[in-house]
Image 1 (tube, helix red, strand yellow):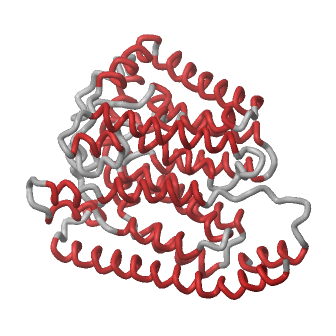
Image 2 (cartoon, rainbow, N blue to C red; image 1 turned 120 degrees about the horizontal axis):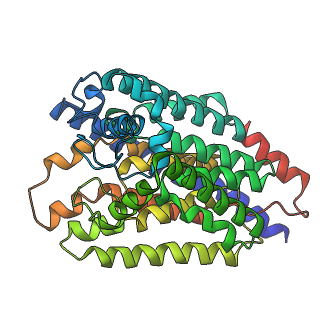
Length: 404
């Protein structure tokens, strides 16, 4: 037994060196690509933050704001002068009603500042929970602040930081031995963005029935609250919109149905493939429920699978998976975590330099789908096992020292 262990220890430095060499190449390529694209396309997302154009640039918040104003005035929250159709359930409009009393631009500025603080706070909360070293936390924050998903979210005025905060709160509750509270927090978050609903199925796959029921009850209760406040017809209108919205042929739609449309295939093919990915992920989690830790990377692997299956998964959704990426650091996969975060600094102007059509262009414009698939594989393959009684004190101490 001793000889194999010694062999593993000798091989570990070689493997770690190789992993960091690969990560260094990915990090360098991401930085160089981002710099080149910012030079070639100076109107990058981050430079658009000061703009006053609500209808074209801060369009998502403009949509939410018009719905909130309609709610305050007793009008239909889905029939507004906004450029885009509100695809979100009534609960979100109820949550954002305080902004209805503000000018749209002022409301956007406040909302953008609050959501930026939510992202920073969520990253710091995860780092504190994982007891990451300060240099690691600082590097993560710098990368997050430089990332395209954050820039896109802030410019559009999207709600992903709110979702991220809810997911982090639930994940921390799970880690601290409060699975029912975690399920409730996940349920409320799903009520705000139903495309995250596969997360609630994880508890069922693992046969944790009390958290499963708690999550479904919280999601249903929060959804019903939104419908009651906004009016019963709002729920019906939202369902009509949700089921009639086509899969957008947009390059930053990272889902598999979006990938199918990009290559001129029926979106149903991508949906079937995505469903297979999701079901396969849940089945795997169920079969290994006694060995994998539900407070590790597993919830985020399920989220990634759900995003691949969803008709719309903008590349901005990647920020919801960052907490799971940070868990990799504590599992000795810091190189993988660094590479996964680094690729997010590539701006959406990546899509501007490809030919207008053709196979090469379609492949090039599938970068964000490729990244999402990579996140799913990485998070699922890194699912940490539960601590076992036979683990030696030396092994545990070594793991803690690696983090601290």
